[in-house]
Length: 266
Image (tube, rainbow, N blue to C red; front, side, top):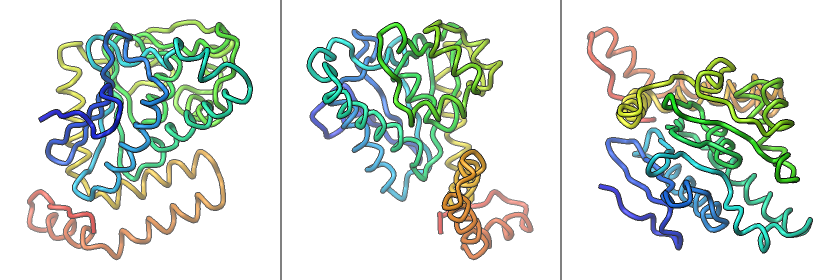
């Protein structure tokens, strides 16, 4: 069952099914453009989902025909009018992207229609991305005369490559799904009518596997990208934990008994 998230912004909705939490950006009349309130509520929603030990994966998608047109530009005259207010707004953006990037759970963006600006940033912060053939991608900061958040730029470079990051941000050009897959940003392009079912299928596969193993792999991949000593140490620690876990014992037992493993996350 889909219900409104218990936050002030009704445009953000959360549903949970079989260990998978779906976050729906629901402002179809504005192509799911993200308001300042939605940025805040996304952080809260991710934190609450992350704290729920029964949740194993997150799917992020938009209502209607579009994923997300980015930040709601109609608010910029008040919330992003000068350097001081822009810093506050950029901090909120960065915190939202970080919440998605740093959640212990594997995340998947299911993209259709437009995926622009802040919407591109939300997708880039996710671990995996699939889209419909008609999806369009852009980072139009240069056309608006503003800077893209530096933390979010790291996600774009990591997911699309440095050259594509330069092209998107320098030109503001739009690229289609085929080109987004060529540069590595997309995992798959799927027919429009199976986007949600395919997203749920992938999420179910993630949810069925050992949570501690996925968390360790996620940390190791992040450490490989940053080459930061603390990230490397954290990844090693999380990897070590898996070998002492009940799930590792269950995985070995299930292999010997030739049955699917039943992982509990401990």
